[in-house]
View (spheres, rainbow, N blue to C red):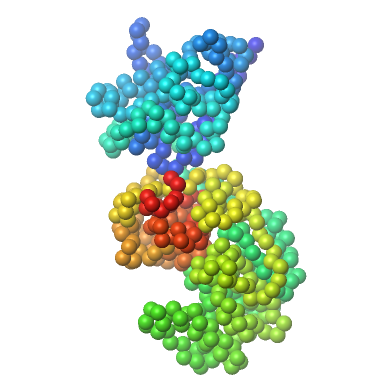
Length: 544
C-alpha cells in the first residue's frame, strides 16, 4: 500500500516542476500555482483548488489540472499506474475549477464582461509521454493535454491551446488584468521575478574554467600567440590576466582595442597594475603622434574623417614609432582584434621593443567593419581555440549564434535560463511603445535595477530612423557604456558596446538592413548574460 503522504509528495514535485518550467517564460506570461477558492455546489458550499493558472493578456487564461506519475484510461475511466481509480476525470476536475474561476470573475467584472474573455482548461502530465488517443468527451482535441515533452518548450503548447479555444481572443484590458491579479495574487505564489533568474545566472557564470587555466599556461610559454573564440568564451578575461602577469615580471605592457568603452572598462580593471598602458587604437595613435611632434588633425568632413581613422591615423602612428620618440613595449596585447585593419598591424609592430611578445584575441564572426574573409591576423600561427561559452546562458548563446549565422558553441557554463523574447512591431513608433512598456516592467514587476539593463541598437538614438528612442522616457538613461551607473539604463550602439556585457540586453531598432550584416545581431545579442529582448520590425525575419 502506498501512503497518502507519498501521493501528496509526488504530486507536489510534479506541480513544482511545471511551475519552474513556466517560470522561464518571459513577460507578459504569468503563472499562479495552487489557487484555492470556495464555490457553490448542489448540496452547499465546497472548496475547490486549481493546480495552476496560466495567463497571457493577449490570449487569456488556462486552468490546469496537473497529474503526477503514470496514468491510463480504460473504458472511459481514469486510473493511476498503481491501478487505483481516480475519483473523477482530470479534465472534469480542470473544467470544474475553470467554471469556479469564471464565477469569481463574473462577481468582479460583471457577467457580460467576464464571459467575453477567454478562459479555458487543460490537463498536464509532466511525468509521461502520452501514447494513444484521448477520449473525445474529455477535450476538443489533443492540444488540451500536455505531457513531459511540453516541459522543454512550453510556450508553443500553451499558444496551441489558446488558438483552439478562441482563435479571435479579446485582449484583456488593464482593468481586467488588475481584477484578475486582485482575485488570484492574495492566495498564490507568483512567478519568481526575472531579477532572481539574473542573479542565479550571474553567480554560475563568474567562475574560472579548466580551459581558461590551460590557455593562460600556454600564453606564459609562447612569445606570440593567436587566441580565437566566439562571443563570451573568456577572451577579454584572459587578456587582462595576461597583462597582469607580464607586468608582474617587470615588462612594459600595451593593451589595446578598437572600442573606447571597452578600453575604459579595461583601464578600470587594471588601474592597480603599474606598467600597463590601456588605450583604444586611435587614442594610441593620437598620443604617440603628438609625443613625436606630429600633427593629428581629424577632418570635419564625414567621408574624409572615415579615411583618416581607417588609414591616416595608422600612418601617423607608424611615423611616430619610426622617429623613436614614442614608447616601446615589451608586450603588446590586442583584444577584439577582428576590428583591426591590416595597415594597423604594421604600426603596432613598430611599437614593440626588440624581442617583444605579441598576443591577439579575436572572433572572426564579430568583424563589424570588414568581411570575415578579408580579415587576417598580424602574424601566421595556429590559433588556440576557446569553445566554451562562459558569458551567456545556453538559450541566449544559441539565439545569438542563429542570428549571426554562425556555429553554436559546444558547451555552455549555464545550460538553463530565460529564453530570449522577440517583440515584433509594424514600425518604429510602435516599437517605442513596446520599449517603454518593457523597461517599466523590467524595473518594476521584474525587480531589476536600471544599471543591470543595456539598450543597444545598430543605429544611434539621434539617427533619423530611430523613432524607437521615444520609448526611453520610461527611465533615466546614460550614454556612458563602460561601467554600470546606479539608477541609469545604459543606451548605445552595438558597435560601441562590443567587448562588454550586461545582465540584461534590449536589442532594439532591428530591421531588414541589419539582416545584411548578421554580425550586428550576433554581437548585440551575445552581450546579454542572463536575459535578452529583441525589438524588431515584423518583416525583419526573426521568429517570435
